[in-house]
Length: 443
Image 1 (cartoon, rainbow, N blue to C red):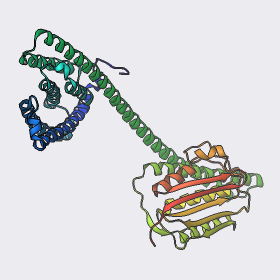
Image 2: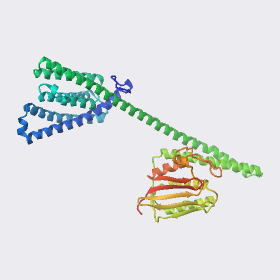
Image 3: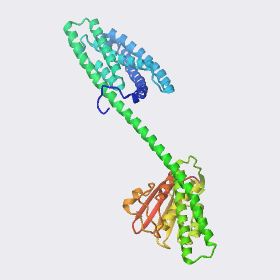
Image 4: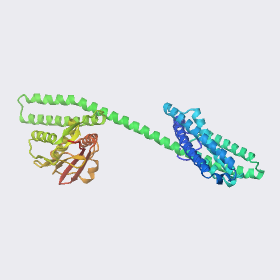
């Protein structure tokens, strides 16, 4: 289906595509009937505005009758298309009645253009514009199967022939007009099949995209479930190793054994930290419930800063507030995870006693939280990928702390769920600043 084709779609997609294009065809009938009706109403209005000039026109009686027929039929096709569209939306399936209705409207448009050409002059070779327009409109707007296109062409040719006979055309005129009609119908056939192929390719691309998206969703769900399962099941053996190390410490042990036990416990802490990040990543992707609470951020940040000072026995974390008060809707547990991760990274990539600033401010619409360090900074080429899960931008800390490449990905997920935005500015050797913008709520 990568070039104009005279064939139908493969059987796997044929029925589904028929349902799809039938719905599109019905919508096209409704739109086309409204446009056709509007044009004829405008012409009818012109009859009333300029009655004398129009009634003196050649073949006015035929134009007059045809105009009324076009108006009535336009209304009928519009009403019937609405009924069939409503039925299609309920069942999502095409029917023979729907296909026949679209076919009849296409033939009707072609006959209208054809008849208008005959009204304009008994020799339609000189006035085929309306007939040509009708053929082009039908071939572009509607999708027909191969056999439907052939039947439509045969029916149109039979109508054209009957109108030629009715107009008492001479043999030579009939021959010329039949030849022109045949050429136009061949052009109609080629255009119709081209647009059939074009729309079929578009439909197949939609199907392929949907299937790929479904595969991605299934893969993502499986990955998250596997992450959660593995991370959860790893807790027990790690806890067992840590318990054994603590029990061994209760006995009298030498310095070498104590050193080994300390290494075991430190490894357990690191492993547990990695497991927590894996579980957090799985939860952030799958959780449906996300409860936020209106929170005054000054107090929230003071509590977090004080907790870090106690845990790390450090005084180099400084909170600077430029907004008093500052309120935002946050999930307390998850947003604390965001700040813990950013502060932890700031300390991990800074020298001992290097200053870390937590700054709170706001602009007209947002509350702004910044975490700034004076550490080693982030290489410029890695700034664009630091928020990707399992990113290659992850690096060991200055004291050898390992990184899973998940921390900042989790931070971004949580900030996004708060309808916020996170930015980073960094320069190697001078430090990094992570900036979070949250929608502000009234005090």
